[in-house]
Length: 441
Ligand SMILES: *Cc1c(COP(=O)(O)O)cnc(C)c1O
Image (cartoon, rainbow, N blue to C red):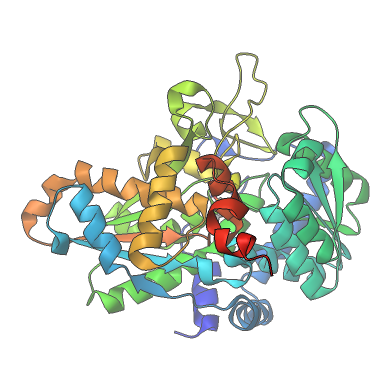
């Protein structure tokens, strides 16, 4: 399969969700100011035309292969498999874990699959200016990267508090030529940046495209972002069947922030899920622990509510105000989740578990020590969940067949080294290079 065939399969999905009003069951929709309805209609129409347009498909395939570096590898992880088997007290050869290597994408994560797709569309719509909001900065960096690549003006809204906390990503965005606008309203974090970005879009909608970074936001974003991320699952399915001689994964495991890497790898397997051959597992951030109130697990503990223009499970207080999320990983530190995941949860199409900050660090170490891969802290949540999954599903192993697991390694962990050191109370300069310090040269 060429990258063009993959792109065609990804954009040409057979499933008819959402409905024409952008609903997945009760979730999704468009909860936006009246003035944005025309822009969302325009975007919907443009996207519907683009996804079946051979020219658009060819352009996307070209950039995904030449710039992003697709297809990404599917790597068998024998030593991680053995370690997880050991942790769950089963025989090593009974567990076969494969990694879908989105960490190998340009910029080090899957987000670029979506920003490239949206910017090709924005260009086709004649937009000259790109805006986005970002929490920790990763979506901002992916957007600024794609804007630089296409030569478009780029403005990133970021809570003033986040600007302070994430100075390195702010600097990255600036080096990529983007303007970073600190937002000092409210709690000075992600949700305030979102409001400000929407305000900007209302004002400048004729020239400006608003890039949403996950399967969230008003229709058509959750569908469009999902389709742009479906390349992950379309590739992985083909690669997996080949490497395992026609066997499917029993479980597909991915971390869930807004839910785009998970939806991207899950979605092309939906018919096998319906036949009971494949099970989907999403992993949310439990932060300091679900009972602590400081986490990023709206599917576990949120209530349906409106955030970012759509109805979905959201972390909120008793008055319906959006609650602050917490996770050691910036990408999972989001109080909402994409509406299709809410639908999947209610309909039992996928199951969702969670992993604490401390457990994620163990997952990070497991991957580093056994496979020589520094995984993103987000992805480390999915890794850490593997031992729970295998321990829970030991019964399945009685059939004599190995348990086959496909893990979405959504990003690489170089960006997280400082956060990990901070969490462990390690001063980077000290412990690592005493010889350098004392050499006196
Ligand atoms: C942003 C990010 C996530 C979370 O976003 P989703 O939309 O849930 O995929 C996960 N992993 C990495 C590496 C990220 O950068």
